[in-house]
Amino acid sequence: MTRIRLKPIIRCIHVFFIKRPGSNQQHLILISIVNVLLLLMLFGYMSVLAIFAYGRPFCMDAFHVGMLITTHAISVCVLTALISLFKKHTLDNTYLYPIIGLFGLVGDLVIFGLAKRTWLLYIAASIGSLFFITMPVLRSKLSRLVEPSEYAIVFIAAAFIEAGGDKGIDAASNSIYNASLHFWPGLVFLVLALLSIFPLFIMGYLAYSEKKTVPITTPYNNTKV
Image (cartoon, rainbow, N blue to C red; front, side):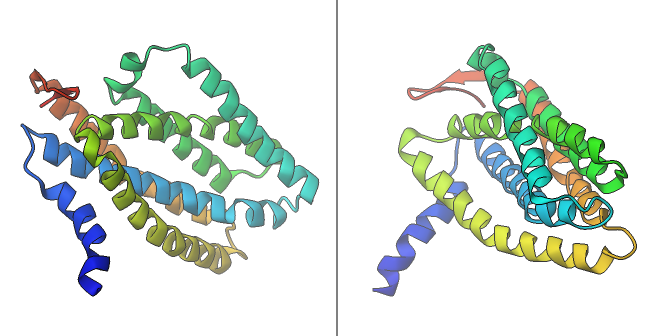
């Protein structure tokens, strides 16, 4: 019975160690790591966003916190509409857009960490919406590195890691916020921004690596290897 229960987990792990053409295996692992790191940054940000806005120095009420979150949602909708005008291959053939999205999230975090005026938070929320370019492009690249029969396994494996990491980063973010509340409430956002160094470095390497690859057509997709 234990073996049967562990079998799906073993399959999720095994999919990352299957030998693939060219650099596909390496790219699969690195993109998955980037995906998890970026989501951890986002989860940490969202876990302290409301409590930060309610607390010092902004002391927002429920209405203004709702407006701040709504600003973020509207910005994402507008950005999605604009992005839909681009052709798909224009977006996922480069790491430029994921990197732009990452810088958008970093800008959002840095402004939150340093802001002293409420209107700066609204600007930060608008800039942060750029991050939502990043995840769809990375997942599109991820799906091109595996066979169609492996799509679910790859994304389930990522979901396992994200689920565990979500709780851990929430606890860490709230601990940092509580510890720095009396001398620098926004410190937690700057700590989260520092995490961007790792996905930025990995995406830079992936972009460089892709330029050196030769396109090879497979029966399932057109993947650079």
